Image (cartoon, rainbow, N blue to C red; front, side):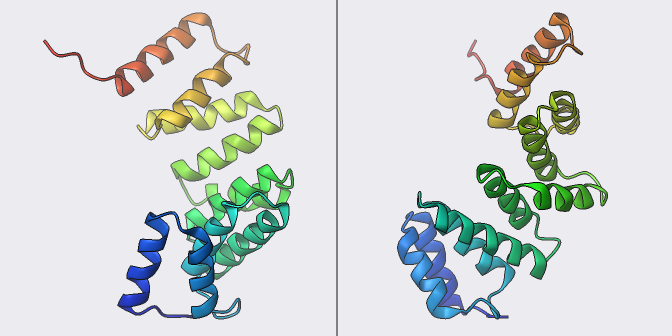
Length: 181
């Protein structure tokens, strides 16, 4: 595994924060190769490649995320990135299987979000909603996932308008800016 010295860590962090992804890619390629690259570096290089619009780069990113996940099966960000790009490429069977295996290990909001996205694309809205409700119960919805949750409630006949309104109020209370007195 490629070990980074402090100077390299600072440089990679700076390039990422400054959104200089082409330079970030070059830096990672210079300090590591595919075989010895750490799970973290594979994931970071995949993230940099996603900033491009060419499908070849997205396929390369997918391969890097999978490599990262294989090197460290507990690196949830790599698995979720793999799932995200797999959905975008409409080739998510393997990602779905890996997410299900990780779901068996216990609750993880990121795993739920990635699974929910796949269920949405498969038209399995009620399964998607169950995952979002689990995240909501654990106070793990963010603005983006709360928006997806509320939107998807509109596509299920399993929930009443009262249930929808109740969920809207909960989410509004959680994310609205407090009014000054």
